[in-house]
Image (cartoon, rainbow, N blue to C red; front, side, top):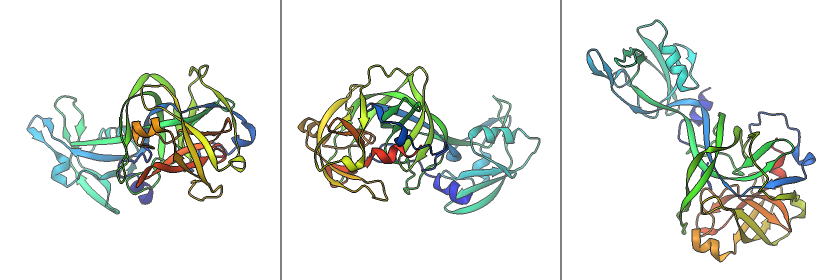
Length: 338
């Protein structure tokens, strides 16, 4: 429990970003799915975590004036609330439900810097809501932007990112569902040597791609929304990593609005057995992309890689000291993750 909670203590990092613990049975989609709908379009991710992190200490208006039980008891920003009175806390609702119990004092167990601390807190009655409050601001979800790699209509799944969503320590974040929305890219921060760039976008809440179900070493996967329209997407065949050749290829990505564009790249290395899923080293050759973004930027992870008309993988990481180069994961790895 301590390890799981600690992993989730920090805000996640969407590495090239933005943002396998597989929950459905491994049915080897790669063996069944030969045709996919090509992605390359941006998505906004709202992922529910399994922890409740304190992101601020606040005052509560009471009949005796402004009070903050959390501050008075020693709860700090950054603490992860693990339990209250011995009951598991996995979401904000759990906190409110437990505080509704008929107790005056509560034992709050928090995780702080690798330690488990028990803190006695006496909540106060909020004058406005008439509910007991600790005086904390908490979060139980994370948000970010990434790129959808493909849609698998055979299994009604979608795949994105090509790498896990992680915390600031690089550890995989366990999720408890979430929603994936359409996204509109309104700006690009250009990447330079030593400083990665990023896509800047706005969620389109009226467009829902589907429900996120898995965050694993190969990306974010989920169930496709029943009413999601794929009629304008391009169908492509899957290309095995064994068929990949050094040389010319292309990626599909979105750097403005919602319009997917094709950009020329080269495959400069193939390593199909790489344990970190870095199966390709790619180099951006397209002047339009380099002039616009400097190369690969955060938010482009998941951009599909196509060679000889077949999808062979997705962009995952950028070389910090050379934004025109980066890594890619093979489509075989992505499809075999569910």
